[in-house]
Structure formats: C-alpha cells, structure tokens
Amino acid sequence: MEKAKKCLKIEPVLLLAVILTGFCLVGCSRAGSMSSGKRIVRVSHGQSEEHPEHLGLLAFKDYVEERLGDKYEVQIYPNEILGAAQKAIELTQTGAIDFVVAGTANLETFDKTYEIFSMPYLFPSEEQYQAFMNDREYMETVYEATKDSGLRVMTWYNAGTRNFYGKKPIRTPKDLKGMKIRVQQSPASVAMVKAFGAAASPMGFGEVYTAIQQGVIDGAENNELALTNNKHGEVAKYFSYDMHQMVPDMLIGNWKFLEGLSPEEFQVFKEAAIRSTEVELKEWEQAVEAAKKTAKEQMGVTFIQVNTGEFQQKVIGLQQEMIEKNPKIRDIYERVMMARKWSEEEPVTDGTWQVGQTKKGVIR
Ligand code: GCU
Image 1 (cartoon, rainbow, N blue to C red):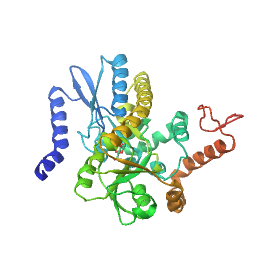
Image 2 (image 1 turned 180 degrees about the vertical axis):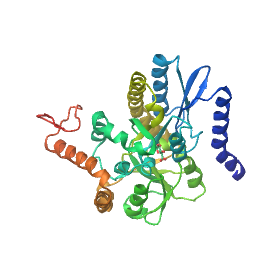
Image 3 (image 1 turned 90 degrees about the horizontal axis):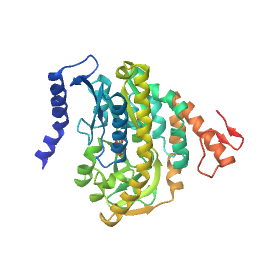
Image 4 (image 1 turned 30 degrees about the horizontal axis):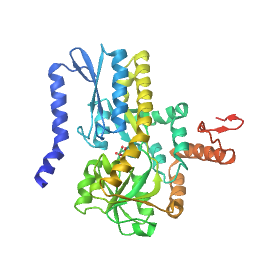
C-alpha cells in the first residue's frame, strides 16, 4: 500500500514529462505546444470527471473549439493528474500548462489580495456571495492582481460553503480543541483553524483521504462534495454545518498566453470562461443535493446542525487582525460590508439582488 502510494506520488511529474515530451516531438511553439498544426491548450484541475467544474470546463472547451477550432485544441486534465493545486499553479506560471482551476486559498502566496476569501464568515449568505462574485466589472480588477506572478484569473466557480468534518462529531468550537485539521496550503486558513482552537495541517487535496484514514489528521474542512467525489465520507462520518468560509475556485490562465492572443481570440476565451461558470453554477446546486443524499444514505455520514454564532465568535478578532495586517484586502472587505449593510437595510428578497443594490437602484 505504502509502495503504491509512493508510485502515485511521482505519477503527475512523470505524466507531465510524457505529455510535454510527446507534444514537443510534434513541435513546440514559443508559448506552448502544437499538434496537427493546432495550439494545444492544457487545462488542469483537481476534481473528478463528474464534478460540476469538469462539466463547466467541457463547456469552455466546446465554446473555444466551436469558434477557434482550426487553431486551438483544449485538453482537460482532471484528478490532479498534472499535480496538486500549488504545483499546477506553478506549472501555469511557467507556461508548461495554460490554465488551472484552483481555490483562491492557493493563490494567497501569489498575491495577498486573495486572502480576503479565506476570511471566515465574510459573506452572510450564499446569495450575497454569488452576487459579489458575479459582479464581473469589479472582479476584473481582482482577477488582474496576480499579474506580477504571470497569472490572470478568467472566471470563478462556486465551491460552496466550507464546514468541518471528521471522525468524531463537532458540535461546538470546544470539540475542535486538540484536533488536527487539514487545511488548504493557505496562511489565512492556518490562522483560522488555530483561532478555532485546533491544530492546522496544510496539505494537498489528494492526500486528505489517506491522512484521515491513517489518523495523521482528525478531520478536514470542505464542502459536501468532498465526502462523495473524493470519498472522504468513507473515513469521516460526521459533517458539521458551521459554515465558516465560502472560498471560490478560479480558472487561472498563464498571463503571457492570454496576452499573446488577438483581442478577438481573447474575447472568445473570456466568453468561454463565462459560459463555463454558468454551467458550473447550475450543476453545483444539484451536485450538492446529490452528495448529501449519497453521503447520508450510502456512506452513513451524519450531518450536524450547529450554532454558527458560537463558531463566529471565535474568529471575530481574526477578521480585524487580517484587515489591519493586509492593506490589499481592505477595498474588497469594505465593499462586501457595504453590500451587507445595504441588503440588511433594504433587503431585496425576490432573488434578483446584486452587489450595491438598494431599492433606489444600484450604487457603485
Ligand atoms: C474544494 C475546492 C478545491 C480545493 C479543495 C481543497 O474541493 O473546490 O479547489 O482544492 O476544496 O480543499 O483543497
């Protein structure tokens, strides 16, 4: 088993080498590789082929190839086969691959603006979170924050609400005391778990199952799909709805590749990205419902409703600390707070709410 695991670990590197060498035998272009005269556009992500993000990316591929198919072929690599998030972002940075889907938590080390999304209890509801993320005009400024790192975000995907889960039930923050919890490789998430009173263990997504199974960690935190798509429900039987974060995933592109496109081509890639988000968002709702059902009925996972206020209390100080320490997140933070205030003062309840909206119109 150990041996098998070790083999699996080197597989992404070998696979990437094979992929790159294979294409280069056919011929390498300045910014990437060519096959049958087409520029191969490689997209890496860490989810399974049933996951809403994969379905969204298939729509991305179709959109690009329908319009620019004589010039570009989009290839999608799921399941971390080209490497876990951090590694895959680095590969995108160097241009070895062109796009990667990764959570904003993994972007924190490339630009600190992205710490904002790891702030616990930033968004008060899924509706406000989605409206904020769908404010494309504003988000474009955020998407360019990683320019100096050679990366540009093209769009976002919903990755739901993150909650704690583990081998034993977590009902109050006290239950977290002394537990070792896996977090993403994100300084802000490490700080958050510590503020909750647990020990944080950052590691790649693909390592979590075995780490829980072997008792290296006591639990993790994620959305419901981790239980089913990633099978964590086999080894962690208690999922507690403390709802501490809404951390989006991003479609991140190599800046040079995108810059090298003609304005018309860039527009097609941009539209394809937006299309992929529309598909992903639609698939997401159904996927979460299905995951809950499977986890409960087939995997024996117990879902626990907790008093979220008790959890929130533990991290109020951390929110303030984050704002004081990181000037890059202040503007977004204030914007989210403004949107919260407006929606509390003049709630729009017909499902059409958007950031900055009051009954008098949208304020920007
Ligand atoms: C979610 C998210 C991924 C992330 C993963 C993790 O599945 O969609 O982008 O990598 O959580 O916790 O690592």
